[in-house]
Length: 246
Image (cartoon, rainbow, N blue to C red; front, side, top):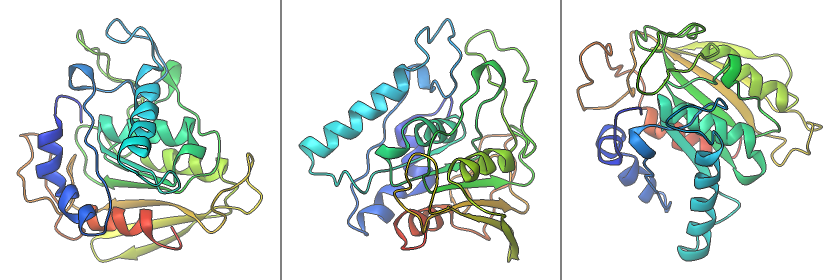
């Protein structure tokens, strides 16, 4: 997330331990200035708006080459600004990834817009009461003298954009204990050639949750809202990314 580092994400998500138990390799990259260029707009801090995409792509190739990571099972996940960065990777490099997940992160819009370009399984997890990045999106963010805060689509529109790029049909929404799950099933004849015709795009809207990682035991910063205990986002995301139905 913006202003955070790898150590904070490690502690918040317990992702390293959970993924390692499944035989997965985990990398925790940090963006310059504790932020990510999740949108396509050039800024003073990031005059090359595509640099973080190329950095992430190079990191993936490095891990495949040096750590024997499986190039057919590469996933990206992130929180907040890092979640938006994960969505940008899925949107602009769908053939590189087997799936992506974002917690409290949406697709940038406006003059920083990111558009999905091909089919890829995506999960968006969002707090219904997020006070930092509202569920309905932030089309007109306040000015920031350091790093501009980007306008975003709503969480649902972010997920729906990936569904459309994957040739999905109408979604199915079900209320589950503590959250609502909406699922789009990717089409078999998606533009660009679907790698995973049985995959899905999913949106989980978590009740009584703020700009937080559901299931975390680390207290969030003041003003970020409550942490839901109804859902363990880490295991839910890993189940989604590695599951047969995605």
